[in-house]
Length: 156
DNA sequence: GCCAACGTTGGC
DNA sequence: GCCAACGTTGGC
Image (cartoon, rainbow, N blue to C red; front, top):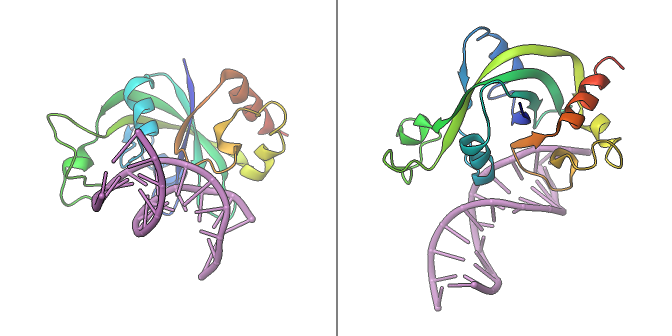
């Protein structure tokens, strides 16, 4: 089992929106970045778990947990001219963009903020892409050690 | 293949 | 709202 961190802007889709679909699966659509796509297409597997990260807000940070339910498959919004994620260059016979299905697990008891995570930039979270300068990846791998370290912060 | 121009991300 | 960092595009 692998671990991930997935960013979303709560103005568009936040942890509360995911919780509203509790018990159902939710397609993580609209990702238009090749690195993130490759991870969804090639690496993410059912049973993997992911941090839900809120970006572009006053207090960015990790707010919840989710589970990967379905591994990568073509993102249908890329084929839909009415979707804001429409990409005319994505051909159904040769899809350019992929997504995974996720499911809500739980909120964290508190937001573990980016500022807090950065305190460990020279320690346990040294190699976490999130806290590297200029990072723009919207989906990134988290090691098992980083995962448990961050989860342990929850009760601190 | 290089690289300037442009667009986007996302923290602050 | 600003702007640094980064990705993408397209002319050459």
